[in-house]
Image 1 (spheres, rainbow over the protein chains, first blue to last red):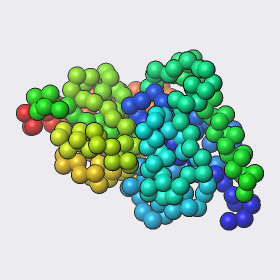
Image 2 (spheres, rainbow over the protein chains, first blue to last red; image 1 turned 90 degrees about the horizontal axis):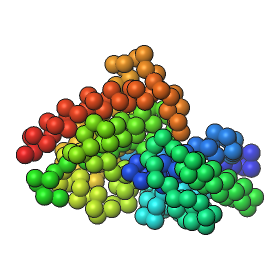
Image 3 (tube, chains in turn red, yellow; image 1 turned 45 degrees about the vertical axis):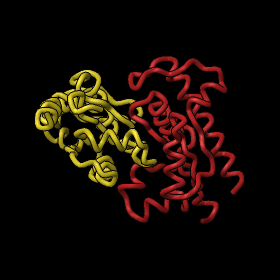
Image 4 (cartoon, rainbow over the protein chains, first blue to last red; image 1 turned 90 degrees about the vertical axis):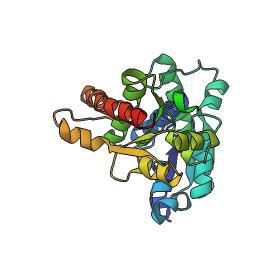
Length: 136
Length: 137
């Protein structure tokens, strides 16, 4: 793959039942839409199970960043198991702790805490995208 | 989970690319938080990707509703691939076809029409929840 087409794949856990899953999803969208729109692509995590060979080649085709909402690390483990080892693995709860942010509690209708967390996670994803592209 | 405490497990598409994926997610919240909070439980779809043991137990011992955002049916296929014996599957586009005036927009943040669509869909699924629990009683 030449430099002109190099993109980074972002895979969010998007966990529906945990606030961190919502933050992962919102932060990934922020990076895809606003922060690094031309450098990134995404795939829905369960598509590795539901899709075909093309979907399972995703992490072989792109260097990937997984973004998990909790320590179960479904996105990181699932991507490695069904596609290929991610280039970077991020966990929302760790980023919140490291940055000294208030814990997130909402699954939807995000409040100030959740917006702060989503912004922080998006910054970490964008920084990881830049690092990976600089390495390539 | 004992049989008399059975709940309907709800799995929503974790779609990150389309507004209809967000609608599916919102239907899951409306159904489990507002419409049938005592008889349903929302679980992360991604747990199926890692064969989480508690989730495996949940889907084999309880009826399941899958709500997908698109025709790829990731939630339904993931549940079936993980051995869920009883899955009622729905796509959020079918609810939109019934309520075309409620056009969903936005992925990270769903517009008001999309939220109304999700609320209506959840109310339609309430009967499905009741039937599933009655059949399994």
